[in-house]
Image (cartoon, rainbow, N blue to C red; front, side, top):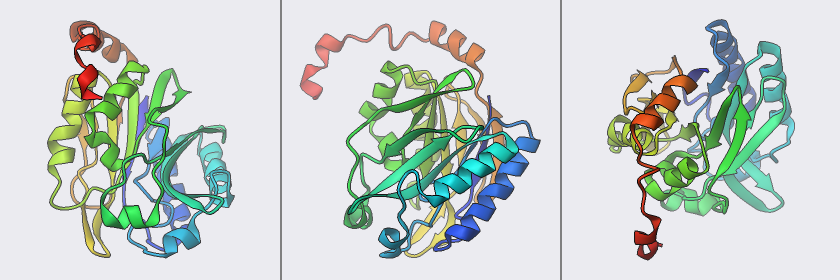
Length: 262
């Protein structure tokens, strides 16, 4: 499945403008043959927007989800995006996957919040593995800091995730995560990992870009630079099956030895 990674911080504070950016990117992705477009963490509203997070938060089935479903249907491309999710009085840092026919396939709430900023504005999610079937692949969702916990990604591997989508707000000086850690996660868990970052200055943060789609061989199929960019690469189920046969990490595990880790 050709996958498009939208590396952009959009227009922080403006849902309407970010929906326009997403719509334009969906058109470009579809024209390039992509079946899936992935946007960064908190793309719908912006990340470093302080108390506006709570003000702009929407339910998973809110107006913006409807607008994105319409975009997905119009261009015939599935869309995954980050947003602040309101559930009653609780706000989560969430990511949602909508199919090319406008169906909401999966909604994930970030389980590992990074730093005081996130802990002040969000409640952590409690479901580590969220998946959906899309174009012959089992697609999983995760957000930014979550991928830095090997237990999280291994749980996805054991649940059969083929392509892990990781909307991200990765900031300086942690660019080694995009450059080194993400390809290793893909290799050690035998899956594709799409790590899609914000870019440039925003509030007190400097987002580093470097979005990538890493394959199960640990090789980056595509990597963006440090500017706004739409990059594309393929997640190939045939190559994935061959790689899993050649690299039997999951088969060679000895779970009986690992009990003390949890």
